[in-house]
Length: 126
Image 1: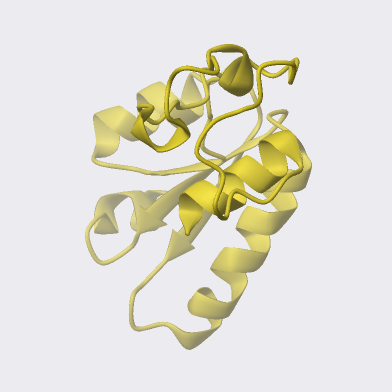
Image 2: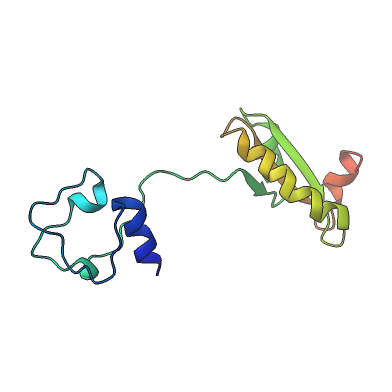
């Protein structure tokens, strides 16, 4: 199922019943440029995208991690102090991540669980 969706997106064709590409078919994508007419389509290894994927948020592990990744960061960092039991935090968290994702790497978000890191919560008046 996932392979069919990938093939539709990459080549724009349905792969139902398709075992090989015809000899005259060419495509400019890296996925299909590795294909040839003699190799069965379904026996190819899965190809993963080579572009790096950067996460928009991260969980703070300890005070040193907070200092390194938040205080010393070159980018602006939005800090989400939250708790697992907090209802408004559960609503606000995904909205903040969505807003940060729209910034396309210009801003990151640090998540601090106040139950695990009470020292940080007290230090920053949460």
